[in-house]
Length: 142
Image (cartoon, rainbow, N blue to C red; front, side, top):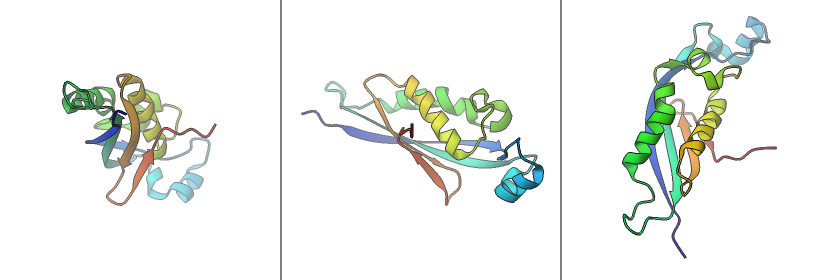
């Protein structure tokens, strides 16, 4: 039986966002979201961990060449998020509150489409601060 091996690569990007619900008053947004609802936004230095799984190729021993994974993630995700304001500069987030929870699902959906068919996207971990991270395994609640 072939081995299923997981590998993880880390990526970094910096982005700003404002967490607020446009249907609410400024007061209600400030009450719920605090300083995260600052009208000018605020920024984070995010760290994204991408974990993929697959069977090592018998010719290379690789699940996926790390240079190929790096290029794929940078072109699919990082270049679209790095030094951007998530509320304004990322079309896929338009109409959504750009919380880290929503962001990680968006990243999953985009990576899932871009990965080769024999590679399984297993987990994303998105660090927002040194103390806070979010994980997603692709589960849906519907």
